[in-house]
Image 1 (cartoon, rainbow, N blue to C red):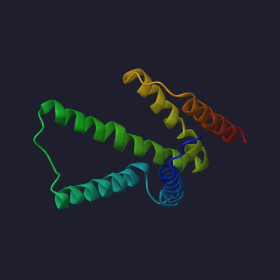
Image 2: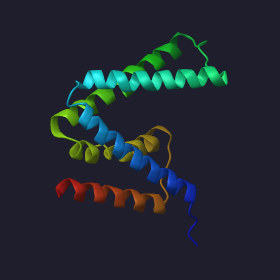
Image 3: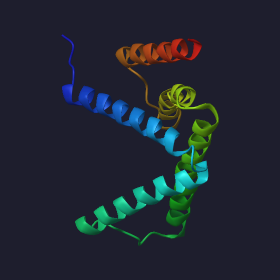
Length: 143
């Protein structure tokens, strides 16, 4: 019998719908703004919302050592600001369709990184699902 987590399926569908809306709205807004400015707004709004949430919940912690602050800066600048700026520039240059298709490569990259860094292996079901996603991405890119 197949064990299916309905809430996981609903979260995945919700994430894909939200991401689609995000890309479509971003592509319209970026016609008037540059990628850097759009990225500044997105990252700034996210920082503000997480900061307020942390304050309300009493979960803000800043007592990190120097190495911790270096990691925070690297994640903030490289993995967040730079990545958002690049996808926004791509949206502005070639529209929403191609960047959306290309960004699905993130799934494969994440799985590959997890297997290398954390020595995690995929089950046969996960492997088949990943291959189906990869094939769908290739077909979408070719059509």
